Amino acid sequence: MDSAPRTTEAPVDKRLTDVVTPATPVETVVAPAPDRLPRAHFTAIALLLASTFVVILNETTMSVALPPIMEDFHVTAATGQWLTTAFMLTMAVTIPATGFLLQRFGTRVSFLLAMSLFSAGTLLAILAPVFGVLVAARVVQALGTAIMLPLLMTTVMNLVPPQHRGKIMGNVSLVISAAPALGPTLSGAVLEPLGWRAVFGVVLPIAVAALVVGAVLLRDVSERVHKRLDALSLVLAALGFGGLVYGLTSLGEAVGGHVPVPPAVPLVVGVVMLVLFAWRQLRLQRSDDAVLDLRVFASRGFSTGLGVLAISMLAMFGSFIVLPLVLQRALGLEPLATGLLVLPGGLAMGLLGPVVGNLYDRVGPRPLVVPGAAMVAVAFAGMATIRPSTDWPFVLAAHVLMSLGLALVFTPLFTTTLGSLMPRLYSHGSAAVGTVQQLAGAAGTAMFVALLTARSVSLAEDGAHPAEALTGGASLAFTVGALVMAAATLLAFTLRRPPIPEGEGPASH
Image (tube, rainbow, N blue to C red; front, top):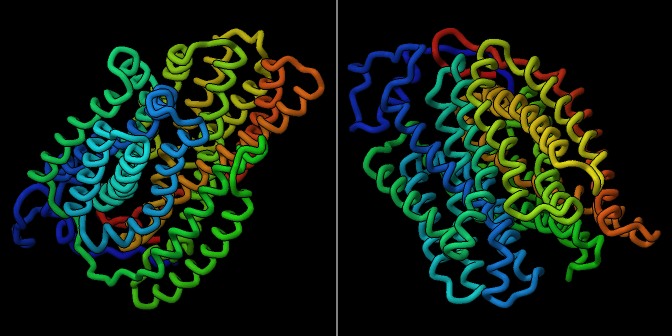
């Protein structure tokens, strides 16, 4: 909902001064220098960055740890996948409500709740005597993880002046990119000498330390809004987003005939429940009681940026699932070698985040996102040519090119998308971004796996060698991914930088 920018005297100080110190009378506080964050604000953001890194790192360790867990508990692959599926479903159900949660309970309580849940889930995973308990532990972990990223992004938007958000959002992109890249490598290094329980054991002390530091230092950085929690909205969100994620996740497996429930059933239920959820939110918005305020989509800048972000996330998550399969089953690389091959790209994407953030502060989103999306499309076109005889340096180069392109895409999109909102909608905007990220990840995985499986089966039936059939299926998946990113490139031309109002107040757009 667009409106003209508004400015007031020292608006940041009245909302945000009490971060790591007791409340100070507003009239005694001097407005912070525009080129430097106060130490209290810097400490709060640094703590949230470190904590978010830990919880995201935990997400990607399962890809390597799953086989020994299955062997230890004597479960099938279909059963073992519930460690990942249950985590994704919990995230999808929880994230839409984080906008309400952050406004109702504030920064401090939300952080302590998130890290307490994550730490408890991690401890339960270490001690899990049976597989069912381990799945429950992953659900508890996911409840904490779902809160952290929206909390981090909302805090950044509240504390950082618009003209410097790119730099800080670059650090957010570093966390989002580097943590998933390091997860499989860390898991592989720990598994062989110490076993799968040590994968959780490495994470637990860091999580507990962050929890203790946050309990001592962190204070609320924005005013709490006392709202009532609408139970019906939570039920509709759980059935809607949960149905969509479960349906999309099982869609790829359904091509091979390995799902107990046809994907159409949860997908239809999910769509119907989401329509009812949206109707319910539109009614609750009249009294500002919506669990997820849909007025964020009234901002053209938010909707456009979120669209490009969703397409990019879809392509990235699809490549995450397909490329390791090709490297191991077609090119014959070991799991550790596979992790090491994709590590440079992941680290490059993360480390470039702050650099891209600084560039965004100077030039805005379009000069970065357009070439970035085009680079990803070219990288996918290159990956579509991979065959069993392809040398690994070519794959490495294509993956690095893709990662560099994504580095140019994510930081500007996060900054522009949320910067297009009024400050009171930041928490709901962060929740919407997190929700779309989960849905895009599930959709990307489903699309790539479905294309890979269908084409591979067809080639195998025609007599192709298994490795040739696999790379043929991957070629189709990456070709479609290249076309999708070409569409994202065109859409990126419509991006524009949110206006920066006079003074330090956030953009109201």
